Length: 374
Length: 249
Ligand SMILES: Nc1ncnc2c1ncn2[C@@H]1O[C@H](COP(=O)(O)OP(=O)(O)OP(=O)(O)O)[C@@H](O)[C@H]1O
Ligand SMILES: [Mg+2]
Image (tube, rainbow over all chains, first blue to last red; front, side, top):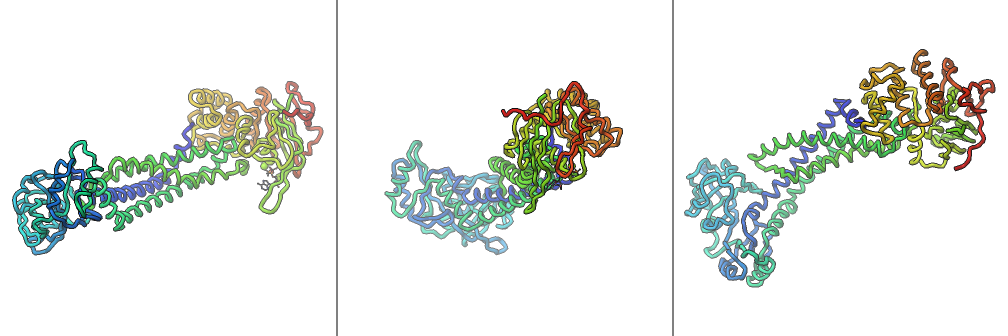
C-alpha cells in the first residue's frame, strides 16, 4: 500500500505538531496520575509487602495496618505452639509524637520489630545497620523525612512521646502514604514509645514451615486464639491498599484525573485527525469512486491515528521518565513499572483509534459522486 | 460486438429533502469496446448523472444497467465499489490525483486497490506511465506537473488493473486546447488500439473529431441527431446506437 496515510499525516507539519502535543500532554497526564496511583498503592502497604512472612495476626476486624489494636503477647506462645508455624514475632505500628530540637512536635509512626530476626524491619538501609537497632533508644528514619523530623546526621538524639530516641541510621525511599514518617525501632523500644503495656502487642508476624498449608494454618490459629484474625499477607496488604485508595477517596481522585487526561487526549486527537481528514476529503471521495471499500479508507485513517499514537507515546515516555526521576526525591512517588508503561501504550493506541471514529463516520457517509462536482 | 455498457429505460430522480428532482428520463444507451462516445449537451441536461450511473457511482431510480453483461441495477451499495474496481476507470475534470503521493505512487495506489502490490505494482505502474509518456516523472509529485501531464497521470491511473471502460467527465475543461487535444488523442488510442470502451462528457467543440459517436442530451433525454451517429472506425464497427437487448445471465 503506497504510504498515503503517512504522507497525509506528515504533509501538514503544524497540524502534526498540534496532534502530537495533544497526545503527549494527555499521555503524560495519564502517566503522572496512574503513576501516582501505583505509587500511592505500593506505599500504603509497603510495610506489609516488605515483611517476609506468611500470616499477619491482628486483633479481630482490624481494617488496615494503621488501625491495629492491642492484644496480649501471650498469644505469641499459642501461635508458636500451633503445628506448621516456623517462627512468630511481635510487631508494632502505631502513631507517636516526635519532638524536634526546636521543640516542634511531628507525628510519626513507630514501627517496632524484632531486630534479631530483622522481620518487618527497614529495607534500603543506606547508613547504619539494622543490628544497631538492638540497642535501647536506637531508631532509624528515612532520608526523605530528614527535614521534617529535623534530623541532619546519625547520632542525634530526639524524643518520642517523652522518651529518648537516638538516630543510628537512614533508609532511602521508604515513604509513608499518610506522610507521617515511619520510625523503625526494636519492639521493646516501640512498646515504650507508644506507651503499650509490658505484655501487649499489636501484631504477630508468622512464618509457616515450608510446605505447610496456609489455609489450614490460618484456620488452626483462628480456632485456637480468640479475638484475632490470621490474615495472609496478600489479603492484609489488599485491605490496607483498598482502605487508603478507595475508602478515603485518595485513589479515586487520581483515577478521575487520569480519566480526564484520557478524555482530553481523545478530544484533541479526534479534532486534529478530523481536520486532517477534512483536508483530504476529496482524496477519500476519489478513493471511493475508484472502488475502494470503506475498510480500505478506514485503514488509511486508522493508520494515521496509529502513527500519531506511536510517535506521541514515544515522546510522552521521554517526558515521563524525567518526571518519574524527579519524583523520586519528592513528596509523592510516581511509579512507572513496565506493566503500566505497556498498559498506557495500548491506552494511547485506543485513545487515538477511538479519536479516528469521528473521521471514519464522516468518510462512511461520503458520497463518491462528489468527485464530479467542480 | 457485445456492448460492455448497456443502459435500458433508465430514469433518475434525485430526492432533495422533500422535493424530487428528475434528472434522467427513459435513457437507452449502449457502449461497445473500441469506441469513443462523446456525451454532450447543455448544462444540467444530465450528462454527469448518466455517466455516474454507467460508472456505478449512482444508482438508477429505475431501469436496467448492465456492465460486461451483468445487471447492476439491483446491487446494494456495498457491492457497487467492487464493480467499479473491476470494470471502470475514471478520469476527472480536476484530475483528482493524490497530492502527497508521487506520480508512480498514484498509479501504484490504484493497483493496490485491485490487489496488485509490491514489485509487480511498481513494474505495472512503470508500464502504464510509459504508455502515457510520463515514465520520466515517476518520482515527481503532482504539484510539479503541468495540467496536461496531470491528466495523463490520471489516465494511467484509470488504466490500472485494465478496466474495460474508461469514463471521463470534462477531462479537457481545465486544459488549453493543444493539451486537450493530446489527451483526447490518448483516449481515442485507448479505444481504437486497446479496445476500451470510452465515454467522455464534454462541452468542448474542439474535441468533436475524437469521438466515434456523439450522444446529445437535453433535459434528461437523449436527442442524438442522426447524422452524427456514423463516425465509427471499421475495425470496431457497431451498427447503431441501439443494440438488441443483451441476454440475461
Ligand atoms: N445531487 C443532486 N441532488 C439533486 N439534484 C441534482 C444532483 N445532482 C444533479 N442534480 C440535478 O440533476 C440535473 C442534471 O445534473 P447533471 O449534473 O447530471 O448535469 P450536467 O449535464 O452534468 O451539467 P453540467 O454540464 O453543468 O455539468 C440538474 O438539474 C441538476 O440540478
Ligand atoms: Mg456535469
